[in-house]
View 1 (tube, one colour):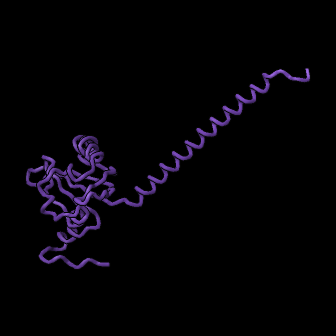
View 2 (cartoon, one colour; view 1 turned 90 degrees about the horizontal axis):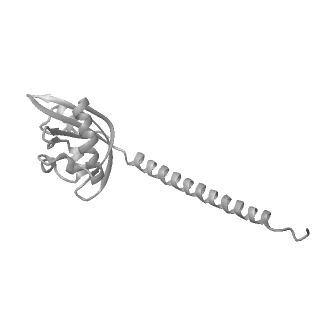
Length: 166
């Protein structure tokens, strides 16, 4: 499926606006400077409603902590971030897991951070399934170890009982 050109936009602007990934530009104060139509659609709001908000407010509480901590630290020290897993929280309270990468730009003496957000619903679901499978395997191993310990105790009790034939 091809996206028809957006009226009033040149080709480059249209690529930004209609990208299959969410695109976000954050200013030096952490405010949303711009976002594309894909991100606005995921968030359930027009882009104009997102612009001027704290970018950290776009994420669920756990991701907000990662964004304000690890993400901000890497941006400050390296000027870029690669492969950080965050979860967007839409206006409808839908969680949208995304893989983010970001880079800093200086435009007209203003420090801006461009963040690309790739949805990873399937990857997130597979990771959850793997975690549950590992937890089930760990529980089964623990139950097996307990059963073996009980069996060993029972064997010791049997071995310590006097032989009635003696």
